[in-house]
Length: 211
Image 1 (cartoon, rainbow, N blue to C red):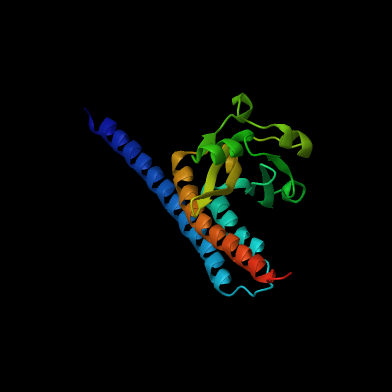
Image 2 (image 1 turned 90 degrees about the vertical axis):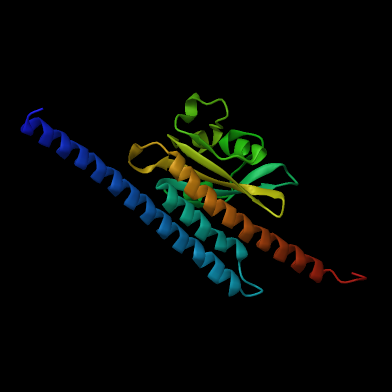
């Protein structure tokens, strides 16, 4: 092998390694930023006043997941056992406002699948997936290109799902995105379980014997 060919191969190898290192640094930076955003939830939870709005605290883990997955859209769906539905209670992105308040059957869609199975899932071609619930896209005049859905559980109960929509730059969601968001959802499950228990305790305290 002549010297020129050898140098070209070495340069190509070093360039590839540099790209890989940049990708790792970018991913770690996203993770650190995501954890920082999530820690705000814990700080505010400690400082929450009795008449405060605990649901608003869920914006922090949702934002953390959005940063970790580098997504254009994100939503947090809570499981309503009474109606057997998933309710979009928090959302971020261009269609966040009309999306909040929307509901879907708890056994439909990618989010429903994640809730029922307790497993995260990546779908980078949703319209080719039989589980996809296209009614939301139709209602909002929106186009879903990719989905990362991760269930939220706490206290041994199914609580909801965080769903990321459309990875930035048109890239597909990958397993590293799934891992980061899954870690955040585990912590979010703990926070959400505490909020549920606080609300339940508050309701029980409001009902006095003889009422």
